[in-house]
Image (cartoon, rainbow, N blue to C red; front, side, top):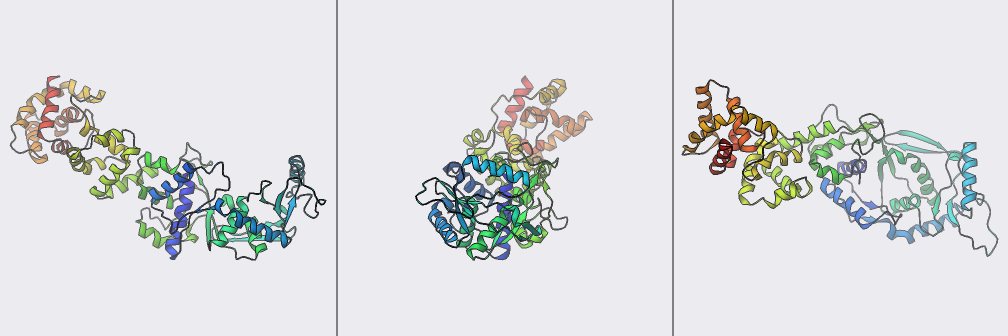
Length: 455
């Protein structure tokens, strides 16, 4: 379930909610080799994570094969379908001739029947009109006209008797009471062919809305290097589901210059006429910035739950989860306000929280070791007994000690805070150092400072 499919699902879900309609999920699995149980589960998991819950159990298309065949029998009886006995070689020749003449492929069997008793394999094709036009009045693209002579006689049943996608979607849309179809504009030509089947069956045609595809930042077709990843990959990259939803809804749909929407605001505002006709461009930088905004805006308790639930999918997350006892959980909760101010993804949040789970003596990053080596340990020697003498341990009391020492030295507070940060976290950057002291607590803080003062 790649990111373009996720956006299409989101647009369908929002429109159904906006109109008070029903959002339905159909697994179009006529290709049984590709439609594995694992592949289907990925779709369910992706929709569930994004919060796009269908309003009814999923319909599996392959289970409706007999109904699809029944529709084909009706088309044969009405003279709107025919058996085609063309061999692979004949079909290749016909395709080449059609390409050279700039027309659609027409079967040699369109208007004739084989001799009685002929047991050659065949497919069943739709007998499309040869003249006139098929018009798609699309809610996004506008009025789109197709010359019927340019539309092939598409296959309805394969030679093994199995229905094709093009037939199955029409029958299923009708039987499921589908009123609106929102999908990528790469299906626009399919819409014309499918309309002909609807009309041949005497059925109402659903309202169509074909949305432009997503391109990469360079305007080229979206690829993995641009972000054409499975939805599960975005969870593993540390994005929040509601941030990804907000980003996706803004890819091709807009409401003025507004960037951020709650789910209810999206539902209230979303409508098809506001979808643009040009491809949108995927931008990881913009997605990260939006994700950071959502992380900072989210209540700490809610963000903590999301983080813990997501740890199994994040680099280093399983080990952190295994170490997350009651004490560590409390420390993580206390550190979260400072951590989320510096992070744009849950991966960065996990990375920033590593100092809470590090075992003594802490490994030192090169820059942190440099800070300590260049006079930083001298400051630790002086501060260690002063901090140890505190009767109350808090961000405020530790800050008072450090500030007093900085004033004695005639130094800026940041100069004195840097070696403390290095000793306490093993890094040159961290949340506010006094918050770090408070979160780690008296015993752990003094122990880490002592480790580096003696080094």
